[in-house]
Image (cartoon, rainbow, N blue to C red):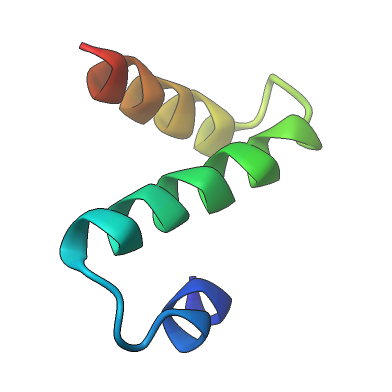
Length: 50
């Protein structure tokens, strides 16, 4: 999260939101699917797609 914020100091809110979601999805790609945080993040992704 800090990396996303520091790399996009002047970006629009929409760009920042997209970069945060991209960061979350990149994080999820390497996570075992039985971790609690994974389930929370997957739920966020379902909400985002709605």
